[in-house]
Image 1 (cartoon, rainbow, N blue to C red):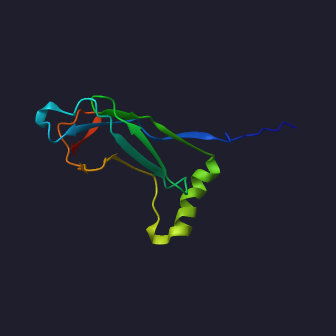
Image 2 (cartoon, rainbow, N blue to C red):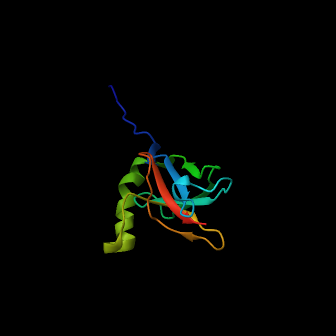
Image 3 (cartoon, rainbow, N blue to C red):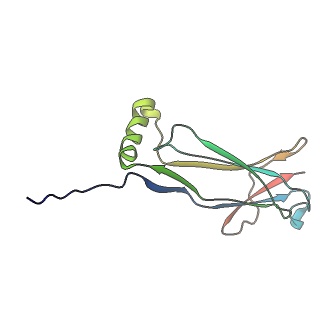
Length: 133
């Protein structure tokens, strides 16, 4: 008697966030760009509401030109949790349940600075914020 077995992989890798690039430009500098030598903190927050109960955050400093790159993020979940996770979200949150990946990036202002989400001449692969220094 022949028997066959079919096994699903226990873990799957799910890339939930692509690499993100951000650039800070000084409002005071006009077109001259970011004030040279001032490395500022930028925070990225993310959560996959279909798979995770809590979110994450990471702060990175810009380079001397005001640019920062956050790496791609990966969430590991087995097939069962990928199916049951959204159902658990509905059960726990009801009509307020969220699904999928939610992310945000913003500069952390130093004392005496004002952060703004006004976008200035972004490159195709980066988000640009103006910062009043």
